[in-house]
Image 1 (cartoon, rainbow, N blue to C red):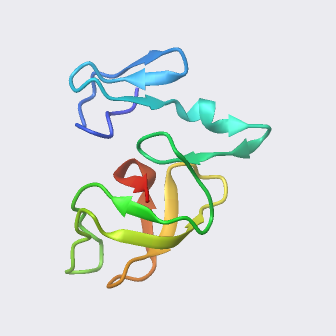
Image 2 (image 1 turned 90 degrees about the vertical axis):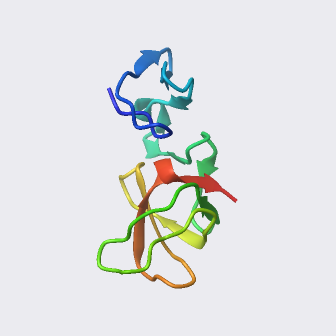
Amino acid sequence: MPACPRCSMENTYPDGDIYVCPDCAHEWPQQSANVADGAAVVRDVHGNVLDNGDSVVVIKDLKVKGSSIPLKQGSIIRNIRLVDGDVEHIEGNSDKIKGLVLKVCFLKKA
């Protein structure tokens, strides 16, 4: 079972097409439910579908490998690109850091 994207606890369990965290009551769709008609569907932390060119907001401060500048909560990543065959990552640029690859569990649609 994957760890909860909100509280990082590993007590999660499946319930139909979603995972549930009993510690913080967060629910999110299972990755296997993200495949529709052979095409991968990328979803943010709240389950909203993400497409190329969308803008997303970072929901927590993130350390960036190779940079001394952290990506702060509330930072907007504009004009994202989806990674082919990967429903957990997107590519994009912030105002200060270029060439980011981010996990969608730390992003919400703007």
